[in-house]
Each structure stands twice: as structure tokens, then as C-alpha cells.
Image (cartoon, rainbow, N blue to C red; front, side, top):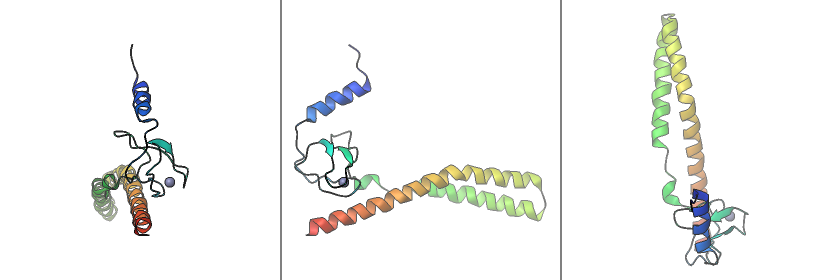
Amino acid sequence: MAMSQSDLDRLADDTYKGHILQSSTYCERCGYNLRTLPYVYTCPECGNEYNARPLKMKGIFQPHTTRVPVGDIAAVVFSVGGALLFGIGGIRSADPTRITIATMFLLMSLPFQWRAYRGLRRLAHSRAVARQIAMEEGE
Ligand SMILES: [Zn+2]
């Protein structure tokens, strides 16, 4: 019998059905402590659907996965820097080739700008959740 990835996922989820989270595990969205709740369930605080099964870990707060998007920021600096260099040079010398290259650099930077923005927003959210967790654990 051939099994698809979703069949395997369902099997793995079944293995954890009825199991209760024994240790502090936090909701990714609101930081609520899900200990004593099932592995696959919905956060009672914010309604976030989560799956705490190892290797799945969906909707679960994982501080180590949220890092500053250094690569995307570096790509933005490089591509915007290139756009400025060619753009300024192109305008000064009225050189359409340089202006075209500057435009290409600028267009190239757009997806990196978007990814860097998303990464920084995720980071800010993760820091806020971490603060929330620290506050509630401190009570
Ligand atoms: Zn929640």
C-alpha cells in the first residue's frame, strides 16, 4: 500500500492523540502555556490551531527559529546600494544604460525588502510573545 505524506502525517498525529503535553509549551500566537492540553488541539486563549508533535511543531512558540533576517537585510543593502551607485552616476552623466542597471538593482531588491520586512515583523512578534511568557511565568 502506497502512503502519501498526508497519510503519514495523519498516522503520526494519531500516535499522539490522547497524549497530554507534560511540559511547558507555548502558543506561537499569544504565548499561552499549553501544558496539560492535548498535543494536537486549539489554544483556549486565542483559538490558534497547534500541533506540538515532534517534527511537526505547528503553531508552537519556538524562540530559536526566530532570528534577525541577516541574509535578507544584507541583500537589501547590496541591491539598494547598487541602485544608488548606478542611479546617481547615470543621472549625473545622463547615461540610460546606468539608469537601466539602477532600475534592475531596485527591482531585484523588492523581494528581499519584502522578506526582510516579514522576518523583522516575525521577530518583533516573537519577542512580544517571549515577554508575555516571561510575565505570566513570573506571576
Ligand atoms: Zn494562543
